Length: 566
Image: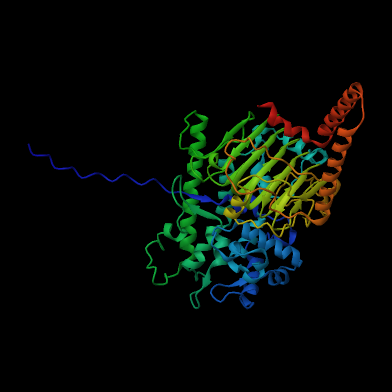
């Protein structure tokens, strides 16, 4: 019997590829410095761009400028100029960029690309999405400062009360935030393209063109791709650059053509988000839906099916909660609305956000890009990170191993900082994976910026004048203690780290050794004390009472939540 000829297989239709905003610059790349915010579109930034391009480049292949040039051009302090470079490095779209790979003492020699800097400065005009409950959030988001009958009330609230006053159900979902960012880009992408474009002489007003190299800088803000797909260079998704010969320079295209193409893609993406939202309202959920809502209040862990979106640890209360690297997909974690708990995220990450937590201890593994901690009360955060930003927090203590100066913004009260104070077996391996150095540790060099965050309309009463935010004090060396991560946590067996990799400052080290010696002496005295059995029992009872009081007064009672689950 002759086999029937094989039928040619019909190629499957490739899935539609949509445009997305990069969340990183909008969540971790905003600096509340008024001199960085330009509200006249591209007008001022065009002259700033031209001035920057007049300086001798620090790199002959692409025009880069150091912090001294940024300081002079923007009329900001050298410290703030370096802050700008560090912030850009933490949100750049290319991990291979020289600014990203540079060691802390190499940043000024490398410098920042002028066009990346200009895009970064442009988006400082972005306003974060207001809670859904506001009656006219779109209007308020575009006009700041806003006036409200509740302004005086909101300003009197603690950071966490402010969060709770906007109930958990009013917090924006991932889809809402993405739509908000796309709408911002829809409105402003024309100005941004004009800042990247070159003019062609003798062609009249419509003479702006965009080279493929300049077009790729838009990757700072947008990308194409869906679940399970690798991100490709932005130009490979553009019909006017996709088939360019890699050995030949691509022909520049009219800026208007690029603008129209991006606007159409943004419109398609917004339509898709609207369709998904409508489907959810009708109960038609899709297993491939990427959106992660921030509305559940029960203890919950949500992780994306691919590495695209953030994983959420949310609503944990009065328990110990552990997540290892093997349990996380992606490198972006958000710890939200957790209270009276100890939370361990022992993994190499790029970004981490802690929001709306209270009376908790949160240990973050190694965060190679940026950590943001916002609206927290009485929280202890222990983290090894490249960069950290603290906003609108109260009575929190931060034990830090950080290569850049901690940034403190907004309405903060009674914050303390201290050197990093723990370790776990894979810590140094995780630090190496994400590019964190054990030295320098700049935990004690916090930079306090304005009390008002111009990117957040609800963080202050309308009309208030700005002033410097309250900075953080250093933990008294006599009160400094090591934090022990329990060695029975599952999956912690292998690893080479046996001690804290961040060297302690001499004053903390000497106090720690003195306290350890005092402990040894006290133990010896108690063992050798000539007491009758009844007196020994009284002494033991008194020690237990004082120890229990200390556990509650210091907050170390949280560490015993681990034992409660055993």
